[in-house]
Image 1 (cartoon, rainbow, N blue to C red):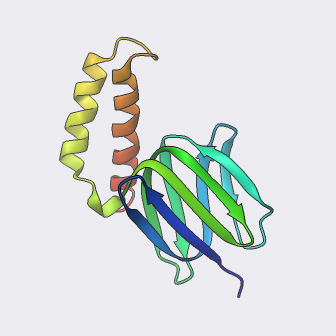
Image 2 (tube, helix red, strand yellow):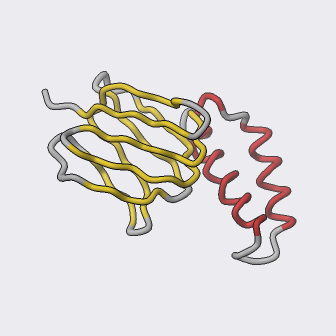
Length: 130
């Protein structure tokens, strides 16, 4: 069976690595799904959940906050500015951060709007596993 070798890293640490059936990431052009045999790709990552299905069928969700990924010869490297596994996210803390950011945001270019998007991504990933 063909499989992908996946590594997800951030500036701080290695987040996840292993063998996968598929990976789905969000780019400026939309979501991209990667299966074994995919043609080479280099793309920017948007603030969004990264979905990995392992060869054992386990779903791994990662909150990715910017970065890029590359695909070449069934090898996928995700280099995120910051990233967190779903089980590392404190849901109540993420909800509070989202509420604070929404109240403080003055418009789409406001830094608080970016903070709200980060909190939304973290909640989507954390709740997706519960």
